[in-house]
Amino acid sequence: MDAEESFRAYVRARTPALSRVAFLLTGDRHLAEDLVQETLLRVAGRWRRIVAGGDPDAYVRRTLYHQHVSVWRRSRRRPVPIAEPPEGHLPDPSAAIASRLSVHAALARLAPRQRAVVVLRYFEDLSEGQTAEILGCGVGTVKSQTRDALARLRRVAPELADDVVPAKEVLR
Image 1 (cartoon, rainbow, N blue to C red):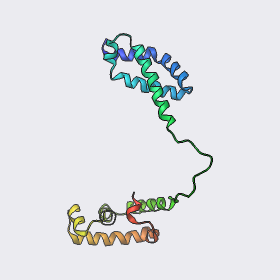
Image 2: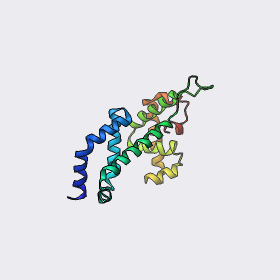
Image 3: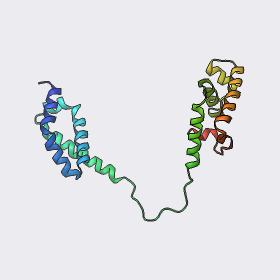
């Protein structure tokens, strides 16, 4: 029997027992399933060596316990909620999010070349010459595409004209 078939046979035979142990460790069926899967993933790559060492069950159980402890340690580092919020307030990101959505929707309504010109000129802050070089066209084409794109943006998204969020910040 090759290593892959040996591993499959082991998984079929031992998954119920490993799942019971994992459930007892975690207290949650879903977490137990995740723990067993993660354990089997860890041992799958080393299966040939594990089987060569004798009974693989002890190694797999030890891996299961170590994996559980690792998950438990990581979960302990999660922030603990406090009763009182800290002083000060965080800025409201909703205006920036609304601007970002408006810009994305407006850019989607431009032709591909116009969209490229606007992004390169105003979001990447490139010169007309640099934009022309990147797009493989003349500076005059960049100028006309920019003019046409801005005119279209003014028609399809007039709210962007009053936008207080800088253009570079919108796409971040």
